[in-house]
Image (cartoon, rainbow, N blue to C red; front, side):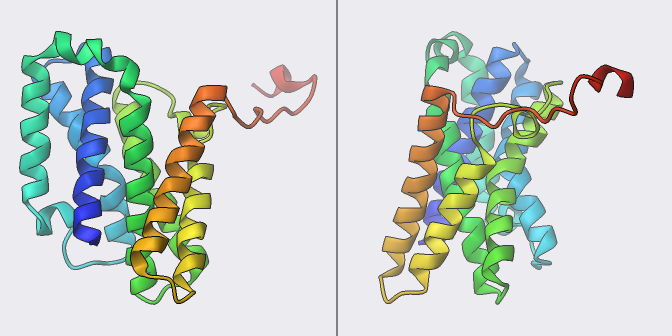
Length: 208
């Protein structure tokens, strides 16, 4: 089940990355770079932190083939991509939800604490986007006042972990966690729910 969810997360994140690259009017190499970064960035960090013997996209090499194919098709049909740019939040939210639960699941299966598992879920779900935005020369939305992102991942990971402690079937815990992340993220985007920027008061400028 986890492999199917992970593959879905890769596809959703790759589509988000391709749309992001299309918005920046990148060429085919740029589209490939962003698609790979967004689809594999967070999971790669997770695998390194967990000291897994193989990175997930190397162990399941068909993931790379899928992302490559999606990126090439996206580069061939740029106008069609721009027409569906308004759908960008959907693959964003889906990728976040799917990857967050997969990351938390891998960590808990290795015997790590629930708190560490939740953090690795957040890393898995968010850092692909961070890497993609850095490549696009943007300040990552994760680090500035923007619609809630990591918070959604963190909440969904805890829903999954807590339900997983009960006798409920695994699919229930996984589904509940994903739904919480996706719904929270879409709601945050829809109503612009965000944390305020940290302010040091009237003397902010003197610190620069």
